[in-house]
Image 1 (spheres, rainbow, N blue to C red):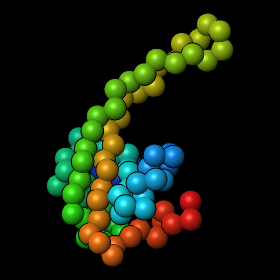
Image 2 (tube, rainbow, N blue to C red):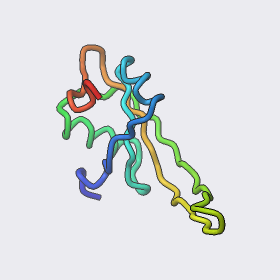
Image 3 (tube, rainbow, N blue to C red):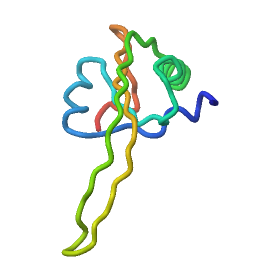
Image 4 (cartoon, rainbow, N blue to C red):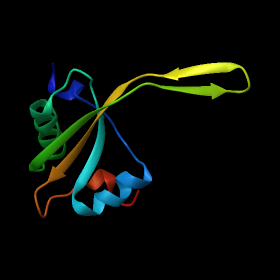
Length: 95
């Protein structure tokens, strides 16, 4: 898998914003990616030093759209990346 196919998008939620002050950032990653690939992708894309990567699979969810329509959200994988002290990703600042 190519290094730039690993990261799909940053996850911007209230919880990910709170842990952003602790040098942790959350990304949606490819379902086939492992910890080593995520670490290499973040280090190369943002020029930072990664200390730890936690990866988790998010299960699919059933939701409702209106009264009768049932929508299934697909399963996805997310990674919480911890950076070395003093490193930060400028992309997330001020969001």
